[in-house]
Amino acid sequence: MQIFATFDHSHYLELAIRKLEQEEVKDIFAVPLDNRTENPKLFDTLHQSDGISLINKGMFLAVIFSVIGASRGFLLEWGPIYWGLIGAGGGFILGFIIDMILVKIKNKKSKKIKGKKSEVILIIDCKEDEGEKVEKILWDHLALGLAKVK
Figure 1 (cartoon, rainbow, N blue to C red):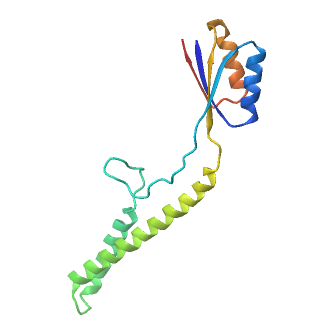
Figure 2 (figure 1 turned 45 degrees about the vertical axis):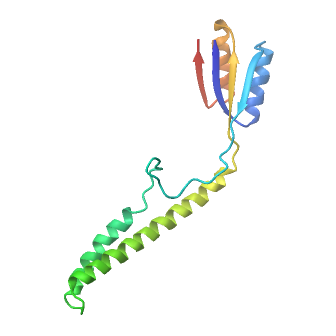
Figure 3 (figure 1 turned 120 degrees about the vertical axis):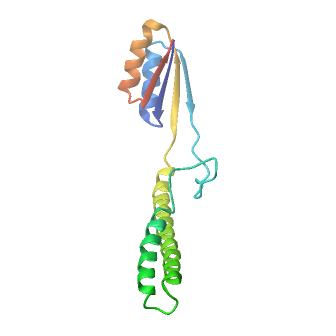
C-alpha cells in the first residue's frame, strides 16, 4: 500500500517522518515542490485565461459616459453622436485604467506571499495493516492532504 501526503515546510513534517521511523516504517520518500519563479501574465491569450477581466468596469463606464455625452451633446457644438462616442471612449479608458490599477495592487499583495515555501509530498510504502496507523500519524502532524493507493 502507498500513502501520499502533502505538508508545508515545517517542523511537523520532520516530526512525522521521525515518528514513522520509530514505528518501523522504513520506505519513506519526501519530494519538495519548487516555487513559481516567474510572474503570472497580466493579459490573457486565446488558450489560457486567469479569470480576471480588465474590461468590465470599462464597458460599464463607457455606457454611462456615452449616455451622458449624447444627452449633453444636444447642447454642445459637435452634436450628440460625437459626444456620445467621446464619452464611450473616455469611459472605457477610465474603467480599463481603474481595473489595471486594482489588478496591480492585488498582484503586489500576492508577491508578499510568493516568498512562502512550497509544499512537500511525502510518499510512504507500508503494509495494509500499518495503513491506519500511518494515516493517523500523518493527520496528527498536520498533513494538508492524504491519499491511499492499494
